[in-house]
Figure (cartoon, rainbow, N blue to C red):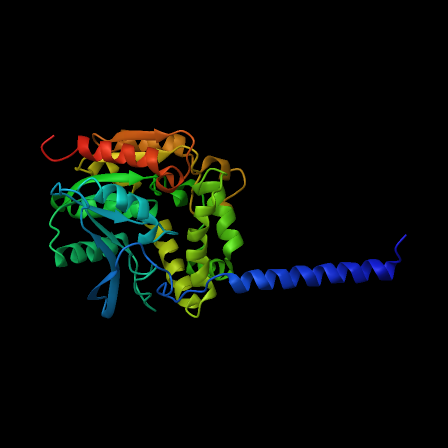
Length: 344
């Protein structure tokens, strides 16, 4: 039987080996700048420079021309909280291949756009920023395809600019319920900041696997894990975490669910039924957690609340159906956009 000294020595050796392996693995993982410097996008990135709240800012975006005969329509893609314009890669290809001009911006505070030290985030402000960008490149009217937090932004945009909004396609939008009213406690910016500073690739991957991809995983998902984790390894980690915390507070404190009945534009809801996303769910009372983020129910409620909305459900998909099953998702998206096209 091994002596106690031998067992301790072997445990110490195993621990050291694990540490060295972890360090070697970490050394191979990318570190990106605060504006995602070093991470390549699928199309050239342009910058819209403007001043907001007294601060000079720039908003990154891709402007992709149709790859077939143009249909005269423009699609604007609004990313989610843990996503970037680049994560719309397959959707950009599908839309441009159907004749759309496609605009995919990074919102202020995200990805390749500015991370201001002080900024009062609101969905109204982000909608104003987006409208100004579109006007600067000659887009007067567009269909908005919006995912996750982008769905909350798209709803606000459509309420503010109904004449400029051709239609909405909301992809597993969050904000279909008011977490605060349901009993999820407020974390506040400081706690969100601490959480964001403590995140890493393993935590991001585990969360994405369970919610975005319905407990499935494919190697191609890893690039999106490293996209986020890379900014948290980089020299601008604090700026990234701070802006992320401000955005989380905006999401929690500015529900749009009460205004669904005021939406006046054609709306398509594309819902992965395995989604369980709810902001701050892990901080909620244990008995409440299973009641939150039930998209199989929330999608139907939203479709009933939005006048004339059409609902498409994906039985086996999670929070990111456009990534998990691109072929099925894009077929449904293009069909829905065509059915609600102007003049039809």
